Image (tube, rainbow, N blue to C red; front, side, top):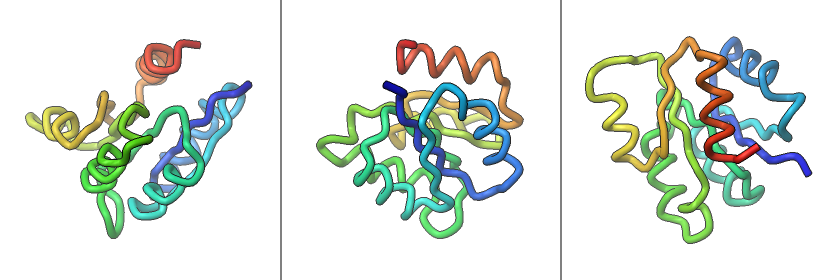
Length: 121
């Protein structure tokens, strides 16, 4: 059975790229803001979440904190995505509950390696 990945991303270009990279191997769920990302995750129980950190409304930091405070979702890996590669961003993502962190533009090999690590396929 295909693993489910929730992509929480508001920028069309980034979303399209992730879908192209992942649609053949995974069942993809899409959310375009933090609040719908949290709701989708709680309803659909994905195997992993790719969470953009700068989202409209509720940002990725808060959405991740909410997911990780949920009894079921706290064990689901969240990989934070950000165009900001500034010092401290990785630590901030990990502190908010992300299990890992990738900067944009996404390095495909690194993305696949992280997915394999967390999903084991």
